[in-house]
Image 1 (tube, one colour):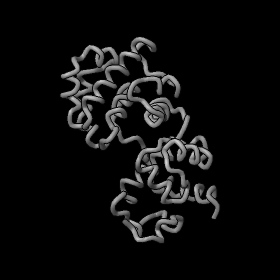
Image 2 (cartoon, one colour):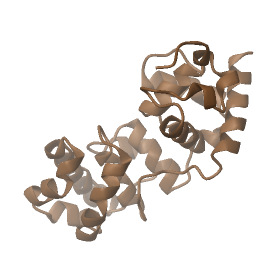
Image 3 (cartoon, one colour):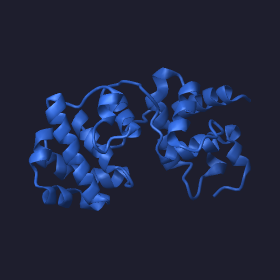
Length: 213
């Protein structure tokens, strides 16, 4: 089976297995998603979702984050880890939103990645889920692990993996494909103990022939 054939078969099965797949960071606005995604670095979505309700009640606009004392912001996000760096990035990011974009979250990759704390992965999350704009494929730890296990890429870095996936996956599916792999990585193909015998992708997965773990 060629790599494009495997990719097509994988997307078909994942779409059937996870029809409700979506971004699991709780948010109601583009700004909330941007902040939640910044907080998700080195942290689980579950933990972020425990923190953001109080944070979003306190800060409803980009200007609110700028006005909030750094110590108070750090206290609100403390349990997400690396809270000082994250607070610094959030304040700088929101200051730039106010100064350059009237407080609104921009809708282009270049404008987003120019913000503090925002790399290509975060920008893809915001563009794809807040605005429905498919610019690229989100490559987090789950997507990186599964795309390698499934034989869709041999590249070592998220940036190069994304380029491989963008060639294999239809443009309209770039955002949802990431959700499918993330859901599968959390529910079936975990890092430490993948459930290979029960996996819907077992017949397509080169790694399934190897000892799981």
